Image (cartoon, rainbow, N blue to C red; front, side):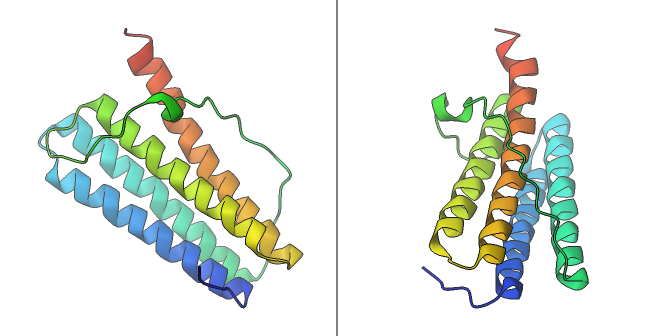
Length: 151
């Protein structure tokens, strides 16, 4: 596991991760044959770009507001099978893919928060984990509203 020596290194890592998410969703949008799913992936990419911009702002301003908030976990992603990205994905598959991606990001940042001693770095990782948890909840709510309620 990479050792971080500064808050800037953590932020650079998180910024790269957000850019990877932008690229991931943008690529899925470009490959999608379904116009509705293409739009959804473009929206996901836009959300990730906002998070990257937020992290860039934190890095530039050298200030971070830590919140003690917790985010509800509906655990929907825990009970769904993995799906592979493909051009003709259904909306349901797109949401499952997004939920699982955000869950993995949450788990990574949560793990990293336990690997550092510095309280500032710990707080930063926990803040990033909560941000990913919020993303996952958004997709879970969407899945609950549009997929589970239809069945």
